[in-house]
Image 1 (cartoon, rainbow, N blue to C red):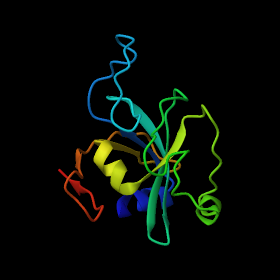
Image 2: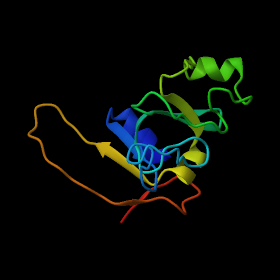
Image 3: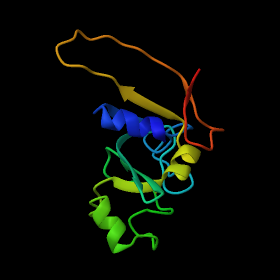
Image 4: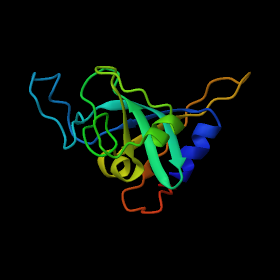
Length: 143
């Protein structure tokens, strides 16, 4: 989680993907992962927050549907007016934007993509496999 905060502070674009295979679009099925997520699907990782010890991530499904429906989702009872204000939370049906705890994020997503960029430089590509399945402290190790 700390590394995601660093990447955010540096202004890097981030994405995250769920494990599995996308059967929703391939076979017109209704195979969703626990919590309303689409298997084998990429999401925009828009922001990460640590508000008085509550670690949250804001994600967006580019389809505008199939949102997380667990803790910290749009209809979660965990939200307080103060926390909504702290993360500028405006729930809109069908926008694909949702929140989830960092713990649930690390449990339900398997890959994070980071776009490193600097002004006035030529483009280059660097890929790293990240393993964060067993890291309870939220630190990522590069494999």
